[in-house]
Image (cartoon, rainbow, N blue to C red; front, side, top):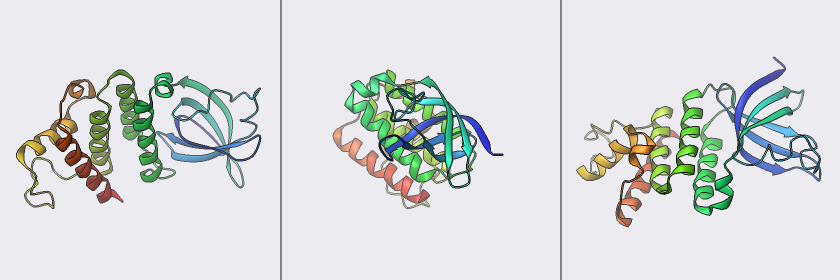
Length: 205
């Protein structure tokens, strides 16, 4: 199949020269796709405003002999609030970096794609961005298969977790984002949570 059609999220964008750019796209059916968008940096390009970082688009991508080429791109959604709010943009960008690291090419990742959409929507709507981000990492690790059983940590390297910390992890794992938006954590709890989720991600590396 020379041409792929799929929705996707722009998770990285780099200028190649004065006219073209390279994009990394997360798709639900083909994993991540490295592609070139010819002429995308021209003011009058058909891609103008479509291929911005974190935009969600419908893509048509040609599998060329040496590289993938974006031939069509229709904007579905852009997160305008991310460009206005540095905190929201910061956490959304971290998610994009995690996706670029852990998702492979030609990999069906529909559940991860949906999780990403849910997380971006939560970041857009709610102000508890750091907790939303930690919840994303826990849910993401679960989909990767690297999350330990949070109800039975006795036989794992995380056996030392305090009951309260374990309960926080369980809640962030199972609850929808709208149900965790009002969770209040101390600075110490947030630091411990961040350290834990980074360890979960390390298990998937």
